[in-house]
Image (tube, rainbow, N blue to C red; front, top):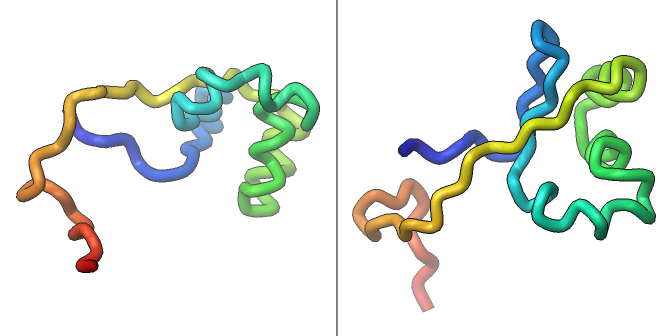
Length: 81
């Protein structure tokens, strides 16, 4: 299973904002910020943030696999110590 893209993906056709599953796991932690969507808008490009604020897209979360990646499959090598 391929890894999801980093960050978020806004699909305007389906009015869906796709996010990391960590936002789902810790949804209550984002309540003081007005919820996940409001929190995320401060990190989106201005045009996407405006769209999310105006259209209130459905939030969807990338799938997550807890199967560790093999070292040789890593795209970014581990830093040397």
